[in-house]
Length: 207
Image (cartoon, rainbow, N blue to C red; front, side, top):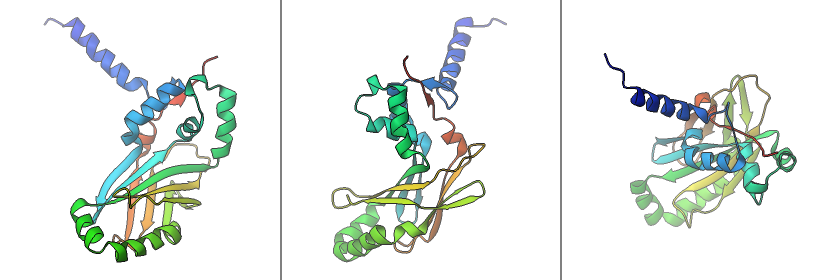
């Protein structure tokens, strides 16, 4: 039996390349941002529940720090660490709630003002207490909550959530619990698996 050496080499190269950028690999800041922008679905969970599309997305601290800095091409380790201190102690997530198209047509066009105003009040003043994050044996309350009021310009609601960052020995699944009191979905859970989170690469700096 003849072995096609070139084909085997190509396959091995592809396998090595696919495994090369993960949590155990180190890449430069501009490569890291490119990875996050290209692979953000790996750090998120998108699911339809009831009449809504929920997107739950992890926002790594490294990504937030690099987004704050002006020029990633000139980032030094000391500069990065200085900004990182401002974010430490909290883990950040984005939650987007988007009404399904056919549902949005009925709800937000025919009854826009009445329903919209009631949901805005809930999102702005009451929703924070209905959010929890479960990791391992801990259930964490939402300690930071920012509602981005863009609905009149975009067909979805967006929230930035912050939960306590505990020191853990191993990476675990992240489960968002949302005990809804307004939009009719009740208690829901959305999970980002530890395997997905484990794909995030680390950052290295030029000397």
